Amino acid sequence: MKRIVVLSGAGISAESGIPTFRDGDGLWNQYRFEELATPQAFARDPGLVLDFYNWRRKIVVDAQPNEGHKALVKLERKYEVQIITQNVDDLHERAGSKNVVHLHGEIRKARSTADPNLIVDLDSWELNLGDMCEKGSQLRPHIVWFGEAVTMIVPALKMAETADLLIVVGTSLVVYPAASLVVYVRPDKPKYYVDPKAYPVGGIQNLQVIQKNAGEGLSELVEELLSKD
Ligand code: APR
Image 1 (cartoon, rainbow, N blue to C red):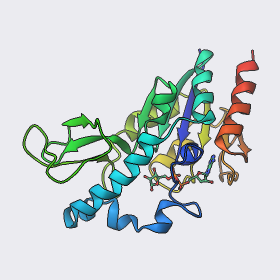
Image 2 (image 1 turned 90 degrees about the vertical axis):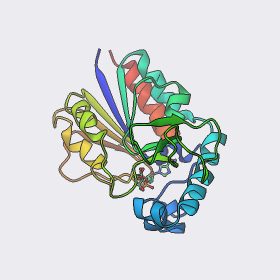
Image 3 (image 1 turned 120 degrees about the vertical axis):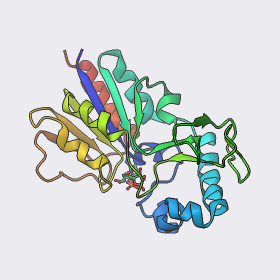
Image 4 (image 1 turned 60 degrees about the horizontal axis):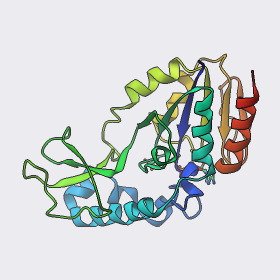
């Protein structure tokens, strides 16, 4: 069975009401990520950082997967689909995608500040000061903050190297190492970039740009891929 690798970004969740980062009304246009999404910010003002992620987590908990997420699930009827997402929401999983790797963490999980391998599911949208892990240390959002290691990039790059086809959806491709996945897919393999502001990425062969929203663009692309023999 052919393997399709999907690299998704905030844009695939935009139609579910989850704000992106760099669009007109994006998060980083309203806040400075240095003040909210770095280990230094958490050390300086943990309550502010926890409040920021509580606000974002509430939006995720109240959101529903959209047609874009669902289209990728349909693709699993005929292909082995490996999703590599920059998103910290769980909409791919809630839509039914089976193989999802989160490069930048998962907002509905928390981890111990004493042991980064101690990760817990959050059963509510709130994580507050005083919420401790079983070892007695403060829990923090299970998010890869700027300046922290993207440990999942190693398996993700291996998946990209063996992909038969790549779909990039809803990402500005400005954050590394995630964006480098595109160049790890073999040059001869077909690649699609679904994004209303997508543009041909320099030096990438066999790339077809679909300048549409994820819901419409992925639905059409998936129908085309499922109809191929
Ligand atoms: N459908 C598809 N794409 C969309 C839609 C939509 N409905 N709406 C917006 N987009 C596109 C935008 O055109 C843009 O290219 O989604 C992309 C969002 O880009 P960013 O806001 O930069 O988000 P992303 O690329 O996921 O950011 C990468 O940066 O801040 C860090 O860790 C954070 O994972 C994030 C990373």
